[in-house]
Image (cartoon, rainbow, N blue to C red; front, side, top):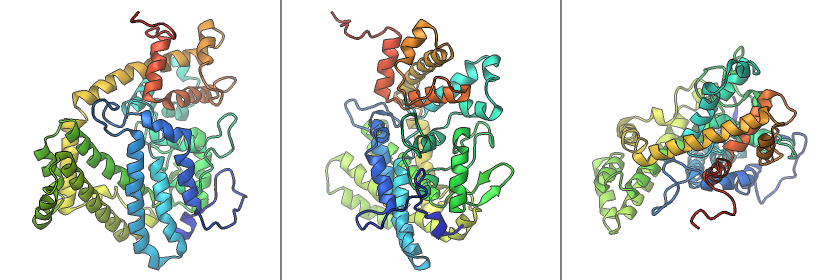
Length: 440
């Protein structure tokens, strides 16, 4: 793989259109702006990241997380671009724009209620479907449904032509689209594991991969090498969710100030720790002290990950690099990151606040999947007609093959915000009736 080809500005759906050079924005900055102004991106403000949506304390949601990942991704891209500048032409500077844009959309396909939402959609098909229903799909299509993947759903959202919408979806550049795909193969490669695109978008990804010259690692199975910038997008996400979750846990009193300090200071040597402690002590607010240390840790990780990328650039371009940038961290930094991961799993991701939102989310999403799948399969029933009127026309659920029909329902449900999903659940179950005050 080579950088010139990998940084193509060709756009999906506008392959034969060539824009005159613009001094105001690069093509990749245009990608970034299209995402920022999209309704799909705005909806992330009402989707759970890890902890329940804001109550007395404001913690991260999908929107703030995505913006922070884009910020860290821009820093990573800039570090790498500066170090590669002597090796290529001006297009290297576009690495920063591509990584930032790809970071913005990395969670775009996630359903409501955090990662548990993905499990609910998968479980619905694997646990609630009879053998006759399963026979309506090919094995590959069934793998898509029973192993719903937010990463693949994001690629679909960006590229699929929904009813009444333009060809090419968001009409993004090939380089940005490829940089969003962490797992460049379909669901049948490793059943039950993560993958990058559904069967419905396989042809689109193949086209993008061919244009960018992505290395075909296994032609028979259709496994590609990652676009090199995927490693930077992935590292930005790894850095943010791990470090920011620690900060959120401190704000929610799940982790003590002492423990949080310990976790963050472990990234530094004794001399750096002494300097950081003295600087943090200049402010009295403990949350501000933690924020300062968090920022320092992110800076440390950005430098370490960009160095790993540069040191392994040749392997990355050949498609032979093993693991992620974060997993290749070594020394004190690597051990400190592992320590944060262990604490997160033990004390954060299994905390009552997180488990409770997963339990509630399962009930809400499972019910929505049940009623809407039944409605599209039995469209002539009175109740089905009422339900189908709630599905926007852009989601094709009528007069299409079963696989596309199920995808239409998933598109509708996965695109909901937590608040909308809960409101719709209450209405269709009769818990809440529009216009009726139950406190009367």
